[in-house]
Image (cartoon, rainbow, N blue to C red; front, side, top):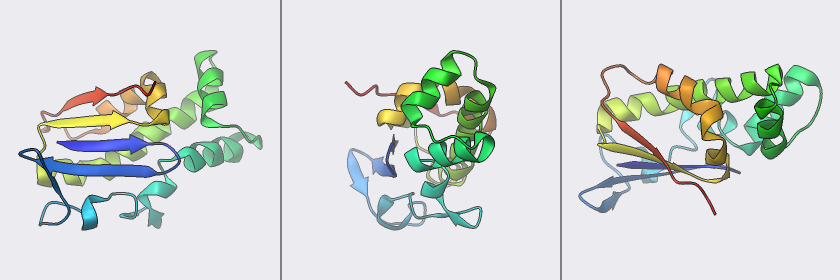
Length: 142
């Protein structure tokens, strides 16, 4: 299983046989994805609270929190919808190599951004490798 938390940062955990893994051929350093290289930066630059707010500001010139963006998206704001769609695509591209190599049986999401699951899940699922028979699950924060 791979657990991913989406919020202020990008958290992750790789688990096999109920045991957390921190190293190995198919596990990132310390089991953490946040600092893995991605598009000239690191993964956390593309999938975090900061990433969502920055992406919307780049499109509109307006600063918004992810909660505000989710509300805007739910009312049909095209820019907010596009930001969340891009978020799902980035997340899939970050996860794909680890899903192919580690081959988890489940991928579990949590964290505050996971509350907006319906806004980024379609592009996440569409961009995941077709050969992956992964089960996606989201744990909604209370």
